[in-house]
Image 1 (cartoon, rainbow, N blue to C red):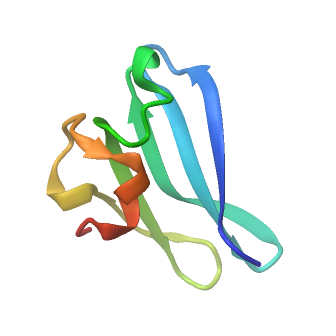
Image 2 (cartoon, helix red, strand yellow):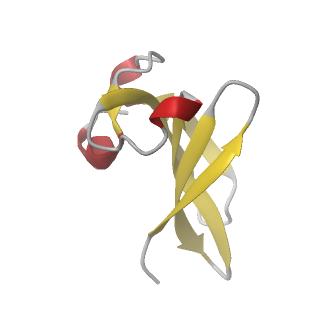
Length: 86
């Protein structure tokens, strides 16, 4: 199965969220999580989000949760999420 991106237009208080999911076994797990200010949630080509990557073992247990380039600021480009260092 391939990765899929699902945009969430729900606010968790102060952030709107986008996620990319990966299949592990029969389940889907979030791989990339992007947090945006609600007014920026559709600006995926602008440096306006914080990106987190979650890595898993073969059973779907989280191994690491890391920020893009080690930075938690809202200054990353969602469309470039796979090019950052984690």
